[in-house]
Image (cartoon, rainbow, N blue to C red; front, side):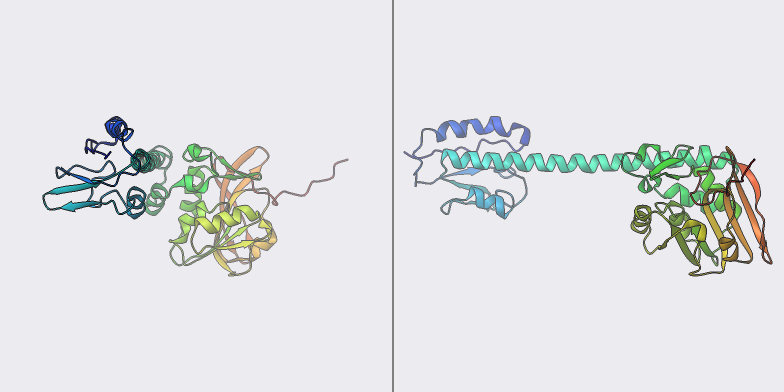
Length: 330
């Protein structure tokens, strides 16, 4: 007995299984050792249940699965001359391969669509953050608005925290550390009057968000981070960032003296080591912790003295290692 094949499989993957059922039925009546080949012409534009490009039976691996004992499908100018001598098992193998190809392509398309939707949503949320949090609170520096409007803040948060990226509050980075609210970051950068010639020391690199905003703006940037996991994340998030792992309150002498020092968090006191690393007439910006009150403060070094003056009451996460020594009380 021979297999009389009809290419009745529709091009659309959704009709694949139902279209293949006549083939299965006919294959059940055929000798598995059928050696005769019946050729039937299939109109141009049809496909062999797999894909509609010029390669019969998909890629090389798929053709190999469906080509047994020299049985092949070939494309001619007038259409697809389909040479078939397949057993029921062989037909089933081809059908399964086709379904898998369709499913894989569908999954890829879904993944791409989801990625595009997330990217568009993130961009919309960033614009809203800039308009509702920064512009309305006096952030007018063009480079800050542009940088914060383009940099994906969620990239610097742990998995599962992305939804909190653009809220006007601090977000946990783990191990007791926080990413400061967008407005606090913008206020610090604006009061610092960052210039392209600045040699900057950033204390409290975290996962690198503030460093990423500064990296293309300044001449030199050194970041200090005490937490090894956060330091690793900062290096991964900001290409070429010079991260020093060490005690935050000790700063870094690597590129001292610095024209600008930014302490990305609230401190109770300014350590002498950090004062000594600031150049004469250099600027410093930090958060201040005075009991439960949090403020942003800035100052300029004159001689050997640095004084910080508060300029805004705002939420700023505390940095460890800057606490005042506890006073003994009778």
